[in-house]
Structures are given as structure tokens and as C-alpha cells.
Length: 235
Image 1 (cartoon, one colour):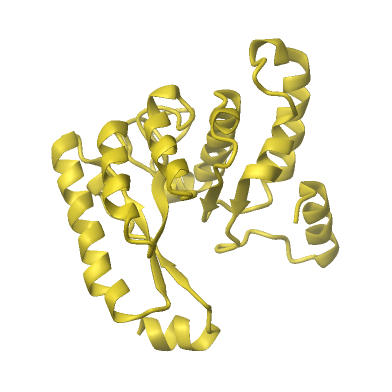
Image 2 (cartoon, one colour):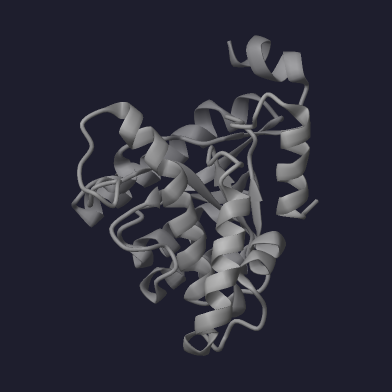
């Protein structure tokens, strides 16, 4: 099915396999690490070995940065693994310094960080508490991605790792211009508390962050879509 519905139809030069599994969210860090090792070995054997067009993300035990770094080191020797996969909402914000071993290992091997929509549900996915319906949960993911950018930029991840690239996976797009405006406006007033930032948040996002366009939440009106792209102001 993957060959006829995706690879053969769209004919990409490569396709990246992202395994969305509960393993990275398991409470036991050791068990989580064991699941992640098994997932990565399975992807290599059952997918990458069977089609030269396929690549994969490294699944890591996200709540243990040290064990995540070890798994990155283990898998990075296989260059078919082309990024590190994280959930957008985890136990602590992604930019916090205790997560930096993940970014240090990824940076050492020139691997981008792929941040996928979703949560490990250590905390409510909304600022108001636990939602009742999938509609609430799903819509809240865009605010979660805004939080990811706030954290990565404000904590100085991109100043500590200036080569690091982050890909927001299934984040949507149309929320980004409003985030850029608000982040820049606030930074101008309180930038003394983050002196390591030598440019505005939107510029860090333009330099270090990319977004996927599936699913694309663009408006049906082409003129409005064009304006959104112009407001993002990036290639």
C-alpha cells in the first residue's frame, strides 16, 4: 500500500518514516528506552532495508534526555536515520536546559529535530485543564507548537546550537504570523531577561524552523493564503 499510494504516485526522492508510538511516553524511563530501541531496530529491518527511498526518524525516550542521547548515538551511525522525533508536549517545555543532551547529540550528527503534533499527556494538553472531546484536544495543538517555539527560542537553544534545525510536523501554518507578531512585540519589552537573544524571535524561527504542510490549514481564498505566506516572510 505504501508504494502504490504514496511513493509510486508522488515519486519523492526520499520519504521519512515517523513512528508515532506510545513508547516515548512510558513512565518507566528504562522501559521507554527499550521500546524505542526496538522500534528503531524494527523500522530499519522492516522498512529501510526493503526500499532505498525510505528514511526514518529516531524515536527516543523523551522523558530521559540522557537515555535519548544514547539512543541517538546508537542509531546515528546508520545514515538512513535523518532526524530525531519528539512530541510537542511532554513533561517539561522542550527548550529547558535539562533537554539539551538531546539537542547536543542531534547537533553532533547533523540531525534535525522533528517535533510532531501530540502529547505524552503528563499534563493537560490545554491551558484550562483536561478536555472532554477530541475537537478540543486537536485544536489545542497549534497553541502547543507556539509554546514549543517560545521555549526553544527563549531558553537559548538556537544560540547554544546555532546549526540546529527544527521541523514542526503536522503543526498547521496559519497560526505562525500571529505568533511572530506577538513574540516580537513582547521580546522588545522584556528582552533584558533573555540577553543571549541578539535578534527577534521571528528571525530565529525563520532561520532554524521549518513546517510541514500536511495537514494544511490554509484558507480557501488564494489572496488570504498569499498574505499569510508574505507575513511569515521566509522561503
